[in-house]
Length: 285
Image (cartoon, rainbow, N blue to C red; front, side, top):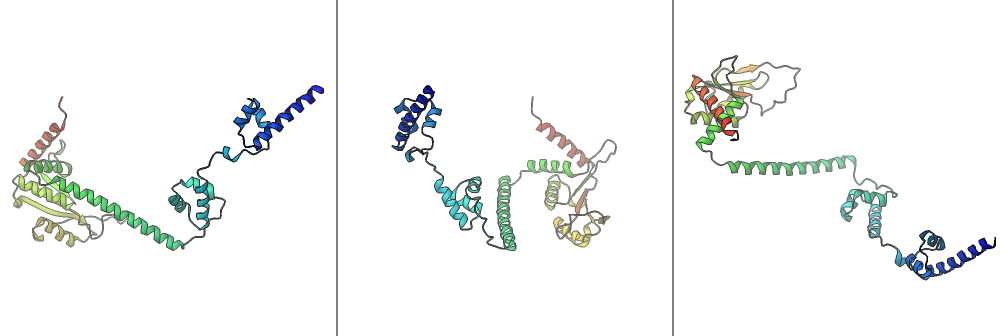
């Protein structure tokens, strides 16, 4: 019992000294050196209940941001607005102000939708401008085509879109069908390059019967630079009411089919030229 009492008395004496040093503003490290105590657990027990000196506390750099965030939230600002002003993360803002009441909406749902739609419209307009600028720059980079470039482009275009001969169906004919007026224009320029007289061309419109057939015929005659009476008989595609067509409206003109009369020799030249393009594109050994 006497031994236990001595231990207690010794501990209390150490505690009294440690508390005194703590109140004098010493840090735990300094108290440890002063008392010669290296046991962190014992040192903690000796100063238990005594707050550390202010100078020993680690500064909290975000305290000012936290206070400012709470002020802004009290003014009715949203998380995103606070984040943008303070330059901190949204998760930090939530941590700092989540105990505060949410601000009252500053606009009606209709106004919110209008603002959102206006923002989307602005974004899409900017994206459209960027797309158009990219396309314009690419168009300028092409410049004027040489005869060789136009020839190779025309052969590739025909092999992608034109009628081709098959082993099971011998059809050495030149027939090209497309709905893009730009593609048709390039193909016509290619036919001029290879010496095909326009009198050899048989052109006709192919379109859904539910569309404006007369308008389509006028449109394609204008692309060709000929009178409507020089077009062949229009081919009408049967309309299926159960099918939802997307190619409708004023921009729909159907397709134009161009066939070259007596074109077997031209077809063979096209096929041979395409084989040459394929061989030329293969890497050399």
